[in-house]
Length: 313
Figure 1 (cartoon, one colour):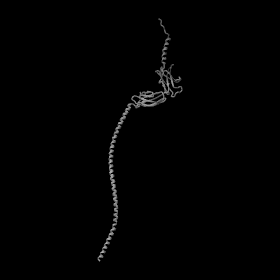
Figure 2: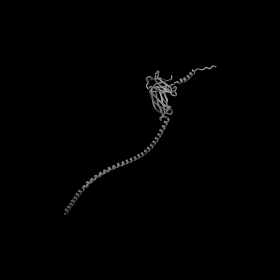
Figure 3: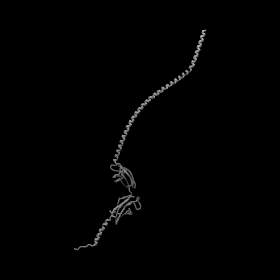
Protein backbone atom coordinates (compact mmCIF):
# COMPACT_ATOMS: atom_id res chain seq x y z
CA UNK A 1 0.00 0.00 0.00
CA UNK A 2 1.29 3.40 -1.00
CA UNK A 3 1.28 6.18 1.59
CA UNK A 4 0.31 9.68 0.38
CA UNK A 5 2.43 12.52 1.74
CA UNK A 6 0.63 15.87 2.29
CA UNK A 7 2.52 18.94 1.16
CA UNK A 8 3.89 21.38 3.72
CA UNK A 9 1.71 24.16 2.32
CA UNK A 10 -1.41 22.25 3.39
CA UNK A 11 -0.30 22.23 7.03
CA UNK A 12 0.61 25.93 6.83
CA UNK A 13 -2.84 26.72 5.46
CA UNK A 14 -4.54 24.81 8.27
CA UNK A 15 -2.37 26.59 10.86
CA UNK A 16 -3.24 29.97 9.34
CA UNK A 17 -6.95 29.18 9.55
CA UNK A 18 -6.63 28.14 13.19
CA UNK A 19 -4.72 31.30 14.06
CA UNK A 20 -6.95 33.70 12.13
CA UNK A 21 -10.28 32.22 13.18
CA UNK A 22 -9.97 33.12 16.90
CA UNK A 23 -8.95 36.65 15.96
CA UNK A 24 -11.99 37.05 13.73
CA UNK A 25 -14.30 35.69 16.45
CA UNK A 26 -12.72 37.90 19.16
CA UNK A 27 -13.26 40.98 17.03
CA UNK A 28 -17.03 40.84 17.73
CA UNK A 29 -18.35 43.95 19.49
CA UNK A 30 -21.56 44.77 21.42
CA UNK A 31 -23.06 48.15 22.35
CA UNK A 32 -25.89 49.20 24.72
CA UNK A 33 -27.12 52.45 26.31
CA UNK A 34 -28.06 53.12 29.88
CA UNK A 35 -31.64 54.02 28.93
CA UNK A 36 -33.81 53.89 25.85
CA UNK A 37 -34.88 57.52 26.14
CA UNK A 38 -33.11 60.70 27.20
CA UNK A 39 -34.04 64.37 27.55
CA UNK A 40 -32.14 67.55 26.59
CA UNK A 41 -29.38 68.27 29.11
CA UNK A 42 -28.97 64.62 30.09
CA UNK A 43 -25.99 62.35 29.36
CA UNK A 44 -26.22 59.23 27.20
CA UNK A 45 -24.20 56.39 28.71
CA UNK A 46 -22.81 53.81 26.30
CA UNK A 47 -21.18 50.48 27.21
CA UNK A 48 -20.30 47.21 25.57
CA UNK A 49 -17.73 44.46 25.11
CA UNK A 50 -15.08 43.54 22.57
CA UNK A 51 -11.62 41.99 22.66
CA UNK A 52 -9.31 43.17 25.43
CA UNK A 53 -7.24 46.33 25.04
CA UNK A 54 -8.74 47.26 21.69
CA UNK A 55 -9.60 50.72 20.36
CA UNK A 56 -13.34 51.29 19.97
CA UNK A 57 -14.79 54.09 17.88
CA UNK A 58 -18.21 55.26 19.07
CA UNK A 59 -20.32 57.58 16.94
CA UNK A 60 -23.76 59.13 17.46
CA UNK A 61 -25.98 59.86 14.43
CA UNK A 62 -29.16 61.90 14.48
CA UNK A 63 -32.53 60.88 12.96
CA UNK A 64 -31.25 62.20 9.60
CA UNK A 65 -28.23 59.88 9.86
CA UNK A 66 -25.95 62.89 10.39
CA UNK A 67 -22.95 62.56 12.73
CA UNK A 68 -23.46 64.74 15.82
CA UNK A 69 -20.70 63.35 18.06
CA UNK A 70 -17.86 60.83 18.03
CA UNK A 71 -15.49 59.52 20.68
CA UNK A 72 -12.74 56.90 21.05
CA UNK A 73 -12.13 54.55 23.96
CA UNK A 74 -9.97 51.51 24.65
CA UNK A 75 -11.49 48.37 26.08
CA UNK A 76 -10.19 47.06 29.37
CA UNK A 77 -8.44 43.80 30.19
CA UNK A 78 -11.85 42.11 30.39
CA UNK A 79 -12.88 43.55 27.02
CA UNK A 80 -15.48 45.95 28.45
CA UNK A 81 -15.67 49.63 27.58
CA UNK A 82 -17.88 52.65 28.34
CA UNK A 83 -18.31 56.21 27.12
CA UNK A 84 -20.78 59.12 27.28
CA UNK A 85 -22.44 61.62 24.98
CA UNK A 86 -23.71 64.90 26.50
CA UNK A 87 -26.99 66.16 25.05
CA UNK A 88 -27.36 69.97 24.74
CA UNK A 89 -29.76 71.52 27.23
CA UNK A 90 -31.54 73.44 24.47
CA UNK A 91 -32.73 71.73 21.28
CA UNK A 92 -32.64 71.97 18.34
CA UNK A 93 -28.98 72.95 18.45
CA UNK A 94 -26.94 72.47 15.29
CA UNK A 95 -27.38 68.84 14.19
CA UNK A 96 -29.04 67.99 17.53
CA UNK A 97 -32.77 67.48 16.96
CA UNK A 98 -35.51 65.50 18.66
CA UNK A 99 -35.98 61.91 17.52
CA UNK A 100 -34.34 58.50 17.37
CA UNK A 101 -30.53 58.40 17.30
CA UNK A 102 -28.19 55.58 16.26
CA UNK A 103 -25.20 54.66 18.39
CA UNK A 104 -22.44 52.81 16.44
CA UNK A 105 -19.48 50.93 17.89
CA UNK A 106 -16.69 50.10 15.42
CA UNK A 107 -13.83 47.68 16.12
CA UNK A 108 -11.46 46.29 13.44
CA UNK A 109 -14.01 46.38 10.65
CA UNK A 110 -16.84 45.11 12.88
CA UNK A 111 -19.77 47.39 13.73
CA UNK A 112 -22.51 47.09 16.35
CA UNK A 113 -25.44 49.50 16.63
CA UNK A 114 -28.29 50.41 18.97
CA UNK A 115 -30.86 53.19 19.03
CA UNK A 116 -31.85 55.74 21.62
CA UNK A 117 -34.59 58.39 21.61
CA UNK A 118 -34.07 62.00 22.60
CA UNK A 119 -37.31 63.74 23.56
CA UNK A 120 -38.59 66.31 26.00
CA UNK A 121 -39.02 64.72 29.42
CA UNK A 122 -41.82 65.67 31.80
CA UNK A 123 -41.20 64.08 35.17
CA UNK A 124 -41.79 64.72 38.87
CA UNK A 125 -39.15 63.69 41.38
CA UNK A 126 -39.00 63.73 45.16
CA UNK A 127 -38.16 61.88 48.35
CA UNK A 128 -40.51 60.17 50.82
CA UNK A 129 -39.51 59.99 54.50
CA UNK A 130 -41.15 59.11 57.81
CA UNK A 131 -41.67 61.43 60.78
CA UNK A 132 -38.07 60.86 61.92
CA UNK A 133 -36.66 61.82 58.52
CA UNK A 134 -35.69 58.24 57.60
CA UNK A 135 -36.18 57.23 53.96
CA UNK A 136 -39.29 55.18 53.16
CA UNK A 137 -38.87 52.59 50.43
CA UNK A 138 -41.78 50.82 48.74
CA UNK A 139 -44.17 53.77 48.96
CA UNK A 140 -46.43 54.20 45.93
CA UNK A 141 -46.43 57.67 44.36
CA UNK A 142 -49.30 58.30 41.94
CA UNK A 143 -49.50 61.45 39.82
CA UNK A 144 -52.52 61.55 37.56
CA UNK A 145 -52.59 58.08 36.01
CA UNK A 146 -48.82 57.49 36.25
CA UNK A 147 -47.16 55.95 39.29
CA UNK A 148 -43.80 54.83 40.66
CA UNK A 149 -42.43 53.15 43.76
CA UNK A 150 -39.86 54.78 46.01
CA UNK A 151 -36.35 53.32 46.02
CA UNK A 152 -34.33 52.28 49.07
CA UNK A 153 -33.29 55.90 49.64
CA UNK A 154 -36.92 57.06 49.42
CA UNK A 155 -36.53 58.77 46.04
CA UNK A 156 -38.97 58.50 43.16
CA UNK A 157 -39.39 59.66 39.56
CA UNK A 158 -42.78 59.69 37.87
CA UNK A 159 -42.79 60.31 34.10
CA UNK A 160 -45.76 62.18 32.63
CA UNK A 161 -47.07 62.50 29.10
CA UNK A 162 -47.81 66.22 29.26
CA UNK A 163 -47.13 69.28 31.37
CA UNK A 164 -49.88 70.53 33.66
CA UNK A 165 -51.41 70.35 37.13
CA UNK A 166 -51.92 66.90 38.64
CA UNK A 167 -53.27 65.35 41.82
CA UNK A 168 -50.53 63.47 43.66
CA UNK A 169 -51.03 60.76 46.28
CA UNK A 170 -48.41 58.86 48.27
CA UNK A 171 -49.48 55.64 49.98
CA UNK A 172 -47.80 52.94 52.07
CA UNK A 173 -49.18 50.27 54.35
CA UNK A 174 -49.56 51.44 58.00
CA UNK A 175 -49.11 55.07 56.96
CA UNK A 176 -51.60 57.84 56.34
CA UNK A 177 -52.14 58.77 52.68
CA UNK A 178 -50.48 61.99 51.57
CA UNK A 179 -52.32 64.11 48.98
CA UNK A 180 -51.25 67.28 47.20
CA UNK A 181 -51.38 69.09 43.87
CA UNK A 182 -48.24 69.30 41.76
CA UNK A 183 -47.61 71.34 38.62
CA UNK A 184 -45.32 69.53 36.18
CA UNK A 185 -43.38 71.50 33.57
CA UNK A 186 -41.26 70.36 30.65
CA UNK A 187 -38.15 68.83 32.19
CA UNK A 188 -37.95 67.66 35.77
CA UNK A 189 -40.11 69.12 38.55
CA UNK A 190 -39.16 68.49 42.17
CA UNK A 191 -41.92 67.73 44.67
CA UNK A 192 -39.38 68.07 47.49
CA UNK A 193 -39.41 65.91 50.61
CA UNK A 194 -42.73 64.31 51.51
CA UNK A 195 -43.28 63.14 55.09
CA UNK A 196 -45.70 60.29 55.79
CA UNK A 197 -47.18 59.95 59.25
CA UNK A 198 -47.45 56.36 60.44
CA UNK A 199 -50.45 54.99 62.30
CA UNK A 200 -48.18 53.96 65.17
CA UNK A 201 -46.79 57.49 65.44
CA UNK A 202 -50.33 58.88 65.45
CA UNK A 203 -51.45 56.44 68.15
CA UNK A 204 -48.39 57.28 70.24
CA UNK A 205 -49.07 60.97 69.73
CA UNK A 206 -52.71 60.50 70.76
CA UNK A 207 -51.63 58.61 73.87
CA UNK A 208 -49.26 61.45 74.74
CA UNK A 209 -52.05 63.96 74.20
CA UNK A 210 -54.43 61.91 76.36
CA UNK A 211 -51.81 61.72 79.10
CA UNK A 212 -51.31 65.47 78.86
CA UNK A 213 -55.08 66.06 78.98
CA UNK A 214 -55.39 63.81 82.06
CA UNK A 215 -52.66 65.82 83.77
CA UNK A 216 -54.42 69.04 82.81
CA UNK A 217 -57.78 67.67 84.06
CA UNK A 218 -56.19 66.72 87.39
CA UNK A 219 -54.69 70.19 87.65
CA UNK A 220 -58.06 71.74 86.77
CA UNK A 221 -59.82 69.62 89.42
CA UNK A 222 -57.30 70.84 91.98
CA UNK A 223 -57.87 74.39 90.85
CA UNK A 224 -61.66 73.95 90.99
CA UNK A 225 -61.43 72.53 94.53
CA UNK A 226 -59.27 75.49 95.54
CA UNK A 227 -61.74 77.87 93.88
CA UNK A 228 -64.66 76.22 95.68
CA UNK A 229 -62.82 76.66 98.98
CA UNK A 230 -62.17 80.29 98.08
CA UNK A 231 -65.85 80.77 97.12
CA UNK A 232 -66.94 79.28 100.46
CA UNK A 233 -64.56 81.64 102.25
CA UNK A 234 -65.87 84.56 100.21
CA UNK A 235 -69.46 83.59 101.00
CA UNK A 236 -68.57 83.57 104.70
CA UNK A 237 -66.93 86.96 104.30
CA UNK A 238 -70.01 88.25 102.45
CA UNK A 239 -72.28 86.98 105.26
CA UNK A 240 -70.03 88.71 107.80
CA UNK A 241 -70.09 91.87 105.71
CA UNK A 242 -73.89 91.72 105.48
CA UNK A 243 -74.05 91.42 109.29
CA UNK A 244 -71.67 94.35 109.58
CA UNK A 245 -73.80 96.34 107.12
CA UNK A 246 -76.91 95.55 109.20
CA UNK A 247 -75.08 96.72 112.31
CA UNK A 248 -73.97 99.84 110.48
CA UNK A 249 -77.54 100.47 109.40
CA UNK A 250 -78.65 100.20 113.08
CA UNK A 251 -75.84 102.53 114.07
CA UNK A 252 -76.92 104.88 111.28
CA UNK A 253 -80.46 104.88 112.74
CA UNK A 254 -79.06 105.62 116.21
CA UNK A 255 -76.87 108.36 114.80
CA UNK A 256 -79.90 109.85 113.05
CA UNK A 257 -81.83 109.72 116.33
CA UNK A 258 -78.89 111.29 118.16
CA UNK A 259 -78.71 113.97 115.52
CA UNK A 260 -82.43 114.71 116.09
CA UNK A 261 -81.88 114.78 119.85
CA UNK A 262 -78.82 116.96 119.43
CA UNK A 263 -80.86 119.35 117.29
CA UNK A 264 -83.55 119.50 119.99
CA UNK A 265 -80.88 120.08 122.63
CA UNK A 266 -79.35 122.78 120.51
CA UNK A 267 -82.81 124.42 120.30
CA UNK A 268 -83.20 124.12 124.07
CA UNK A 269 -79.73 125.50 124.64
CA UNK A 270 -80.53 128.39 122.36
CA UNK A 271 -83.75 129.03 124.30
CA UNK A 272 -81.83 128.84 127.58
CA UNK A 273 -79.24 131.19 126.21
CA UNK A 274 -82.04 133.64 125.41
CA UNK A 275 -83.47 133.26 128.91
CA UNK A 276 -80.05 133.70 130.47
CA UNK A 277 -79.52 136.80 128.42
CA UNK A 278 -82.87 138.17 129.62
CA UNK A 279 -81.96 137.33 133.24
CA UNK A 280 -78.62 138.92 132.77
CA UNK A 281 -80.40 142.07 131.61
CA UNK A 282 -82.78 141.87 134.55
CA UNK A 283 -79.93 141.26 136.97
CA UNK A 284 -78.15 144.19 135.49
CA UNK A 285 -81.17 146.42 136.35
CA UNK A 286 -81.51 145.18 140.03
CA UNK A 287 -79.10 147.70 141.74
CA UNK A 288 -81.05 150.70 140.38
CA UNK A 289 -84.31 149.09 141.42
CA UNK A 290 -83.03 148.46 144.90
CA UNK A 291 -81.86 152.07 145.19
CA UNK A 292 -85.24 153.42 144.15
CA UNK A 293 -86.97 151.07 146.61
CA UNK A 294 -84.69 152.24 149.38
CA UNK A 295 -85.42 155.88 148.53
CA UNK A 296 -89.09 155.09 148.43
CA UNK A 297 -88.88 153.44 151.79
CA UNK A 298 -87.08 156.48 153.26
CA UNK A 299 -89.65 158.79 151.78
CA UNK A 300 -92.37 156.63 153.21
CA UNK A 301 -90.75 156.65 156.65
CA UNK A 302 -90.37 160.40 156.49
CA UNK A 303 -93.96 160.72 155.46
CA UNK A 304 -95.06 158.50 158.29
CA UNK A 305 -93.01 160.54 160.78
CA UNK A 306 -94.44 163.78 159.49
CA UNK A 307 -97.97 162.40 159.69
CA UNK A 308 -97.30 161.11 163.14
CA UNK A 309 -95.96 164.50 164.30
CA UNK A 310 -98.88 166.22 162.79
CA UNK A 311 -101.19 163.91 164.60
CA UNK A 312 -99.24 164.20 167.81
CA UNK A 313 -99.69 167.97 167.79
